[in-house]
Length: 102
Image (cartoon, rainbow, N blue to C red; front, side, top):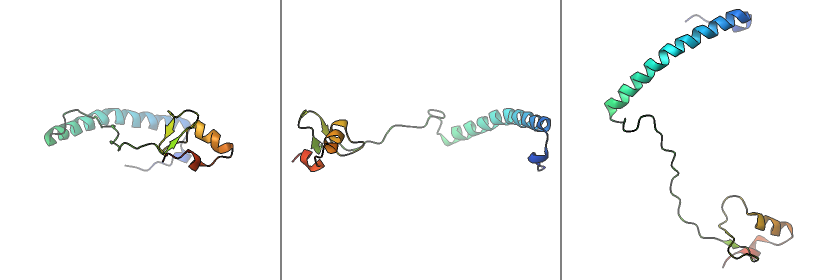
């Protein structure tokens, strides 16, 4: 592979190089993909080709630690972003411990 001095090349030369690289990739990518698919079949990993599992891992149930006294059905476990009702109460001067569930 010969090195290219891209800074000294003209726009036409760069476009020509771009077309050359694009065509080379267009020919090589399917060949490489077929080779990798064949390798997966050999390894027995081709049950669902190219599927990655994006399922979230199971987290244990977390019991609520804070309750809105105005609406007791609104609770917060202390994880993630604070709920709006709690943020508003804290801005009004109350402490977070005032909302703790015993």
